[in-house]
Amino acid sequence: MEQLFGLLSFGPDGWGDEIAAGAWLTLRLAAATLPFGLVLGFAVALARNSRRTWLSVAGNAFATVFRGLPELLTLFIVYYGGQILVQRIASLVTDDYIEVNGFVAGLVALGLVFAAYASEVFLGAFRSIGRGQFEGAAALGLRWPAAMRLVIVPQLVRLALPGLANLWLVLLKETSLVSIIALNDLLRETSVAVGATKEPFFFYLVACLIYLAMSIVSSFGIVGIERWSDRGMKR
Image (cartoon, rainbow, N blue to C red; front, side, top):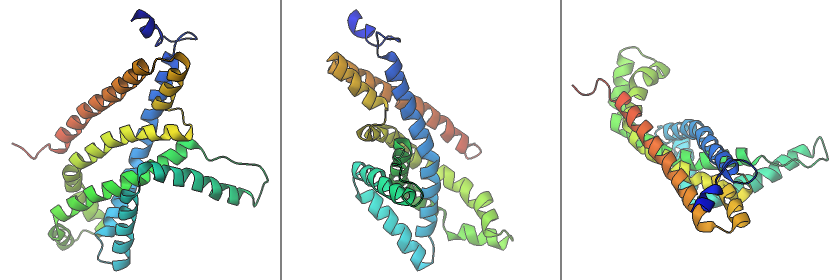
């Protein structure tokens, strides 16, 4: 047992450095994907809730496509399709081969999927608020941006937060998919360690514990945010 834990030591004789670096990249990828997915998901929900037919159709099409495709397939399409697109554009000015950054490809792919599901959460929150809130804000002389900022969004955040919190936990786990495109996240570094040490159970168990720790810490943070969003709602 002591020998096994020695494999997690930091330095040339252990894999602690690599596992820690992979966990840090996983956290950075999830944290970078979150704002992209939230903003895009909110925009898609606005489009789906719009009275303009073309906006509603476009928003529904986006949500249907990226909720219907497997996440791994979306990642492949973004990574390899992006590679072709970048190379075509680059060929106009240079003959050098330009490779798509795996981190950016993972961010975009996971962000698109996150946005599709987040749009469902936002859309449900919008419909819970009702159009009467917009009409009341307009009666008070508030323009649409001011009405959204002062009246709608504060209610929207409180209503959407539980669903978005669940999506964040799912996003943390889905970052493991980027190991397929050779991005050195937690799962890929774990797999490299397994191949070098022939200790699959130990290292995959360590990876499980790290993912679990991330989820537990996130859950505590989510509870704090929910309490903050509910301030003034309960006596």
